[in-house]
Length: 398
Image 1 (spheres, rainbow, N blue to C red):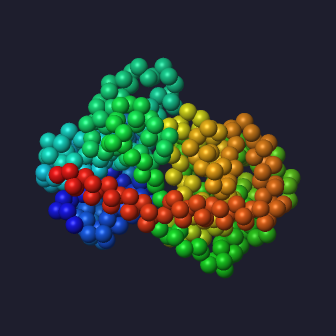
Image 2: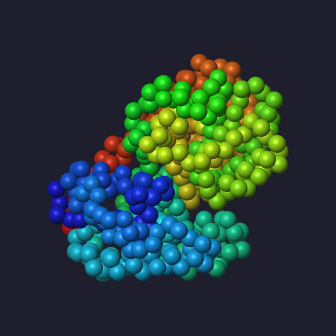
């Protein structure tokens, strides 16, 4: 095994339940099991090491007040992370920057390079374009300095690793060389590697009071880049259909908005549940008959919905609402593991849900295709092997 150490830098890490924290925890501990020396720089105060991973904590973690508090916490973490890099990184190490907080790699790459480390950008989100997409194109000129700094950092890196093919096209469009850019997809949680016991799934459905019903779920973060109006419109069309239940499982920035919209329409077939423990993820995903995955048009080259891999691992049909020409829509069509709908196709979405309910054999066949797609493309073992190969290649360029 190479002598180099691997440093990951991200604001959140174990025991956080944030998506990047869970992904990073899986990967860091998996690399340790393969013999790598792994260190993580993250906010928080929880002690380390844990499972062989050395953890450098920088202080208060995920708690925020308003936008000013959030920006201040981000700035504090960026400064603290740079100090940790200056203290611990030595020539030949590999430093992997995630994208929480936004522009993290831009802020820290110079420090890593001055320590003569190799730099990898593990790109989960493309900022500042996400900000301008939310706020409107009028903001884009004001963000030019940030884009210039980000592009410079990406081009100078030893590798840029976006998590989706559409995102890879964005990275390449900003001038990153083909030999320095590679897609490394996110994976389904390792707890989903084995299907859950049928009795546990039945017990979960009974606890939710949906036994005998056809359940379509949205499980995960109700975030700003996701679509919910088409789901509620489909629920409204199916409000008088016996036995069809829509579940929203999770929280997020748009949770209150979505719940208020459902209440305003008096959608008694829509229910809201709190986030479920990770160790129950296999059961809770399998307790639904199909799952929604959504993405607002215009964001397909900037983010990649991570919940899809979990849906596929659960062996359930994926109902994607978003850009029809996106990577995700193409995957579902190619693999036969779900269906895709444009945002204005709520009627078609409702019709597809009815057909899945009325044709159990078809629903099961699509679910089997979903599980097969997961086993080919989204297992943690496959992702870990890809990361191991990349790090070995970088270690060999010393």
